[in-house]
View 1 (cartoon, rainbow, N blue to C red):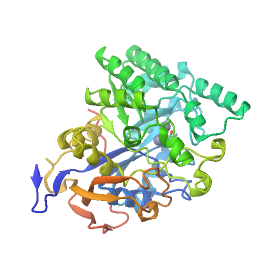
View 2 (cartoon, rainbow, N blue to C red):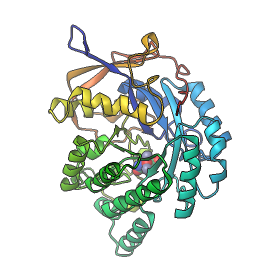
View 3 (cartoon, helix red, strand yellow):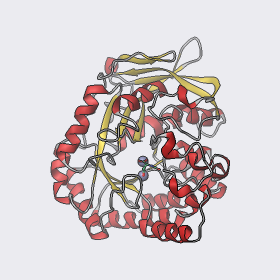
Length: 412
Ligand code: NCD
Ligand code: ZN
Ligand code: ZN
């Protein structure tokens, strides 16, 4: 552990394996430049973009477009997942060749309305992706259950933010996880569960690991920080898919995390405009609001606050927020390690800094709505270094837009 005179600590560069950078096509929400500026300011040295852009990243040329835009403007290093739908299973080898970090299937309907493939198509996709050596991640919610309750709640005139949460029950998440574990056991595919929100789903992952399925899982700071009470306190600002769960599910998620069911921490950084988030009327009709919020500049502070509270050690945090994401997605040791000398990525943190996010507009994204506004933290990133170059220092993003580059993937 490297500690300087001020008590700051140098750790391997923090990796966020789940951001919605929104480019190409949704630049009114966010773009590569603004997302990676926020990453640099948050102490994050590598980000992986989600494919629910416009166009969706479902073909080699769309992936290449996304990479080109990133090369032109990113402040930190980046990669991207490609989506699998009913329409593009035959293109999996070509998308692999084009350099995608991994693949993603949206099981339930979520932002962007990327339709899920059917179960047969998912099995076939797992077999094809297995041949590439890459990993397939899931938005792990059963869409049929969610659509059923959404329609029922709307017919009953239930419009509160908490109703949105309850329309996406834990069983929708747990069932999706169990089904994908069964499919992965059959096909031998490497799978990943993005944004695991509940103890029930995390325990299902643990059972899958115990029986030898190659499954990894992620959770996000908001599931560990807030309980569903936040929907009553902050309303649609905290609306997210999967939703933030009750205290019992959260306690069991913490247990599963401590016992190793959860491999990685990532944000699900999902910027939307204040108007889309309905910030002027946060307790208005939840069906008019949108799900998701930013996180790149609060993830390191949130996790360091948990370290400060003694929920886990600094080393355990670094493993889940740097080493493991690099290993899970085939970027290790190029990323997630200090062993690569002058080309290393690292983050310098001040573990004792006490501060409050009083004004969301001090963040660097294009749209900064987040339920973490008003929250207090112990800890923050003070310096961010990507391949030997300082990109953020003492409150200023000092790196050049376009310095960030695509991470090459090694799945061997
Ligand atoms: C994400 C988005 O806005 O793209 N929103 C969310 O609530 N998580 C979509 C997603 O991650 O499923
Ligand atoms: Zn999702
Ligand atoms: Zn997401």
